[in-house]
Image 1 (tube, rainbow, N blue to C red):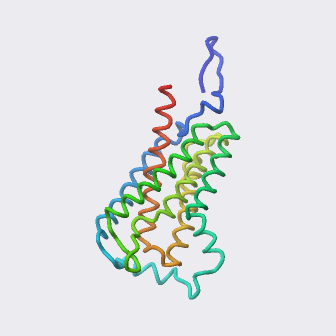
Image 2: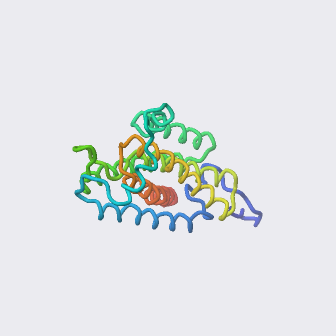
Length: 222
């Protein structure tokens, strides 16, 4: 919102709307802090390990099903694969572009690239393994899916002109929903330890607000 030279109120054009609307900035800082903790603590606790931790051993049996390869879990898992991830990003980006939210479209692409790169680098650094030789921490599937859902939450909060409380609920709720469903699939398929998915969730909570803030900063300079 701004004012014209004559003093009358005007609404910013959609293409000039920030990726991170002012109402969500306090929540974004809080989510980033929580994300940093969720990402860093398991990384320190499980670095170099090749087995489940105490929390993993408690959660895993409560999620695993006798036959995990049912179509629903496999479909969810596919969304986190490179092709599925690309499809999800293109879909959200297209929606943002059609609505004229150019900064959010750039955030969608940038955030998923950043969380994917971060998860790959951390896998090598943390060196936690599952099934022998597979690097597992953090879960890139969970990170990417949560990132897409967070951007979708930012989009809905802007388009629907939500106030601070409701916008925070929408963004956090979508992140929990998307990240939780993907985490469940990864645990049920024994592709990751439960704490791997926690780290992936934290990675998205940290990187998406940071990416949105960076996009806004660069755009405002131009």
